[in-house]
Length: 361
Ligand code: NAI
Ligand code: MG
Image 1 (cartoon, protein in one colour):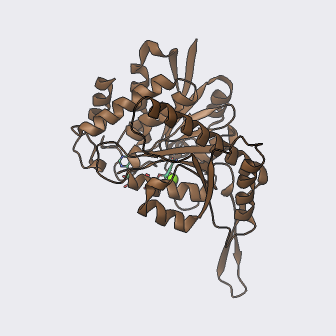
Image 2 (cartoon, helix red, strand yellow):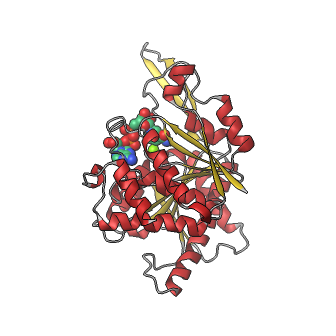
Image 3 (tube, helix red, strand yellow):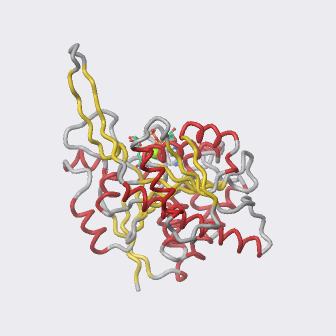
């Protein structure tokens, strides 16, 4: 059999870090089915060339012939451009990738707080439905509105994803403990629901209720999991004060986006944090960071977020040992500290770090 992977580098450092992930996947050799990489177009540059940020051919190929995909990063302009909308947001919709799973893990041996949490971000609605409207106020000045959609269906399925992940993580910790490994999280698995329903009682209220109902309606399946809530602002505060108290955090789209960049700062760099976009039938790996225009084209972007995203993609496809191999190689390079990109205080290039990881593999 072959594993056919759609590769969408898109813009900026996406074009530097995605090839690194591809090399690492290739280096796993015969421990995986034969890999076939299909380069696919998307992004701001593609929009400027051909007027479409997400070509139909890219979507068609992903839907009809790929087993999974990897996305780099896109440069979305911060002003409105006629005809342009973000291809990553569109891809998540087209492929029904309703969950964005973002593990944030500190590296053993490096300074800083100990973190081992995963943020489960709803990926299809909230303010990302982009229903915005500009009107003229009574006094003639402009006034803008945005519609925020929170549905019971989307909140319930993301809630279910969070509880299932908490179960899996709990089992993994038990196995690790039984093997004599040190485990950071000592308590029962825990799901923290992030919201702001003290202010947005209708939208965030529905999110909160729907996620709570997942546990209550599961006929005891999630009895071993603690459930708590955190208003999004105090979530940020507590994440910075005592990040070790979090296991799985589940959040609506925008809060999830914001707290995951914040959590990335805790572990040293956005360049370390991976994610997968997941639905019931497709997986797309994607580093959490953007296209980093301040460092693009210099070969100094940290490839680790992208490489770890490849590992995360593999493990959700069931290639758990192969994913573990990648993560062990990455941790070894980080712990040694000889080859680090500038975001981690080092002087190495993207290619040096990739080479170092390939050697460990
Ligand atoms: P960003 O994530 O691109 O960069 C933020 C900061 O982190 C920058 O200083 C950058 O140099 C640094 N950084 C990010 N990734 C790094 C890596 N791998 N190695 C070393 N340093 C790294 O966010 P920013 O600057 O707010 O956005 C830039 C562009 O990226 C915008 O056009 C934005 O729309 C887009 N973006 C795209 C995303 C995606 O493709 N999913 C996600 C976030 C932003
Ligand atoms: Mg973000």
